[in-house]
Amino acid sequence: MTAQIDPFHAIAISRLAHQLKAEGRSIIHMEFGQPSTGAPAAAIAAAHHVLDTDGMGYWESPALRARIVQHYRETYGVTVEEGRIILTCGASPALVLALLSAFSPGERVALARPGYVAYRNTLKALRMEPVEIACGADSGYQLTAAHLAALDPAPAGVIIASPANPTGTIIPADEMRAIAEVCRTRNIRIVSDEIYHGLSYIEPCRSILEFEPTALVVNSFSKYFSMVAWRLGWLLAPADLIASARAYVGNLFLTAPSLSQHAGLAAMDATAELDDHVEVYRRNRALLLEALPSLGLADIAPPDGAFYIYASVAHLTDDSLAFCMDLLRDTGVAIASGVDFDPVEGRRFIRISFAVSTAEVEEALSRLRPWFAARQ
Image 1 (tube, rainbow, N blue to C red):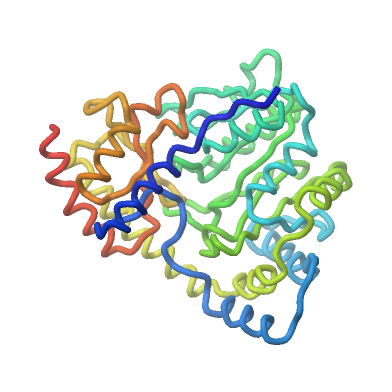
Image 2: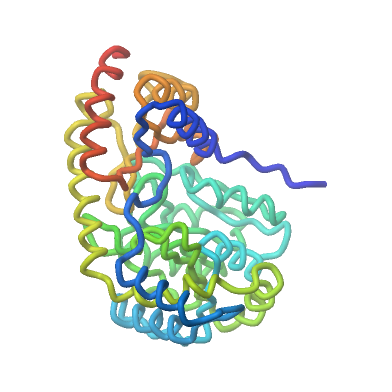
């Protein structure tokens, strides 16, 4: 029997946005978690050079793996072996590899609700059982060690994300340490999605590897490195799962794009340019946090990192998907419905991405103010 998974509703919103744009409408895209900036200049220059000089082919860059090892040492004080790093066509295949390598069909894997739509649906597609744990404001919309300690029976695994999508919340270091301790005690394998690392506004992001060296880590060049379309990411797997993960990647995905690997290596040293992007997101975040309460959107998750605002619209609707469609048609501002991230409570939430220019945020707010005022 074919696995039944839910659609990604933000894609339908984006499809309507592009249709309206083709009709001549002015559209501001705040529905997807993708930077509006392009790859760093050094990455683009490296790609041009490679296109002119290298025929390329199936390949996994030893230099890029070594540079990622350096990144873990310098950023987190963690030493990892280069052989544990598998380069992938973005974070999505890395998640598939992590789940296939660590778990068997039928096994239970815990995750926070709200959470990224693909966690739940990828588990279902792989015939694993998602165990969604409702997480609200009292836990910062994040899983806690107490949540995991209370599960009976213990799940085979857990997916954590810090910063998280859709909320942007960060798991504090003490809580991450406690999660690692509970998981060791209860034999729960950890998969940590760290694709938003580098995008934090309150405190530095901490890698789960600082607390649990046997965890699987998923990461990507799409967010901080602003390389969405280059489809490049990596899985950092523990020693006991490397052979399995490499067998899966070779059969299911072959290799990451060679051109992207060359560009990604250059991007890792473009921190000055990339940190400028983070400052833009910081300004955008401040603008939204100041303005949204005047729109009636005061109940929001704390956006510690990433580039999202997750806000309640319970006082306005219990169908946030239709709400977002109406808002898009009326204002030209595309945002995401909470139903992608929380199939239970998400119909009363929206997610706004601020990974756009500051001018676009200001223009979006000028359109949203009268629209929301008419609905109070």
